[in-house]
Length: 401
Figure 1 (cartoon, rainbow, N blue to C red):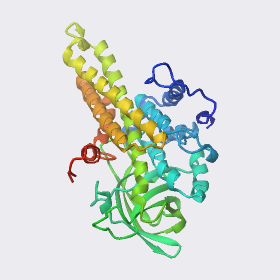
Figure 2 (cartoon, rainbow, N blue to C red):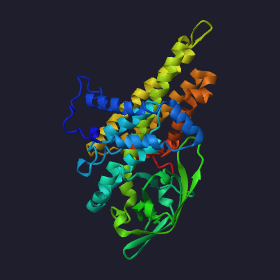
Figure 3 (spheres, helix red, strand yellow):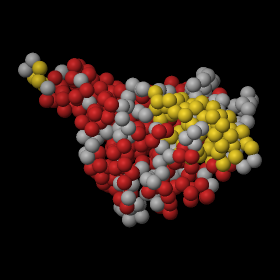
Figure 4 (tube, one colour):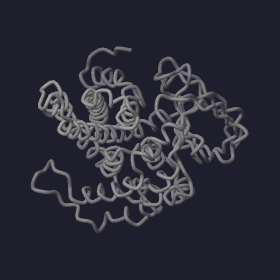
């Protein structure tokens, strides 16, 4: 656990190139890569075939302190920022692993850290930091609301010192491997003039709610433990309300910015994995007497994906720096997610094309990573919604929806 608590003693100076990565992050990457090397491609292929949660891998990340980096040191965490967290998730994916089963613990943390009470932090953060408690589930999406979060119908009705929650969520990941869930519900009817009002955030202790929270596992394109969740008259102590009642939508926006930056990091990692595999295969594979990488039709798509990925990485770093400095970062966070996803998807397709038939063979791992990175064009937010955000909020054009 101590490896992540070096912020006060490690050298945080930068190299002469202002755009290069600080040496301490390079060392952080090396340590994360060492953990990933304990779980080779065969480990992930086996889990993917059986649709099994990577329990041993998540346990190793937890034991190394890699999932507690955003938790302040006074609660036993690493005390680092989004910059470091994004680098960790990027490195996991770059090594051929999958950060998805563990990443929520990082981006959910933003809402709890910024808006949780002192008592909530003291009660939960030390256990999350040590790995005794898992906070991996985020209950927002509903079957009929989709991306229109303000139209959710799950309700939380106050009765004295408890809220009674009833509703249905869908595409909720890791519920069956989490102890806590951050949940968004309506505490007041939807107001057409101000639809974001009346939403509140709750910290749900799933360990004490087993008879009121029912999960129906969904088989997804990739190995991601995903559920439809029904909540039936679940009583939640009022002390588990996070932030101000009725202002939950605003509270989770900070978490969304963190989420977009972290997802961008994961996609940069995926993209680099694809480019490294494709470049190596294109150099080693000889057809018609020469390496296939000498053909521009093979070489140029890989090179193009690499250029776009490096550009996405720069805006990702800028977004993370602004987030860590407490500056507004909505445009940067959204653009980072958009650019990194598109670059990773281009790299994935170039890699499949380079491998040809082998790209569809599970033994080469390309098709597994291809399926995993495809998710991020539509989740946790569709790239089309990001374009709508940029068009309206950044460029000042009329709302498109």
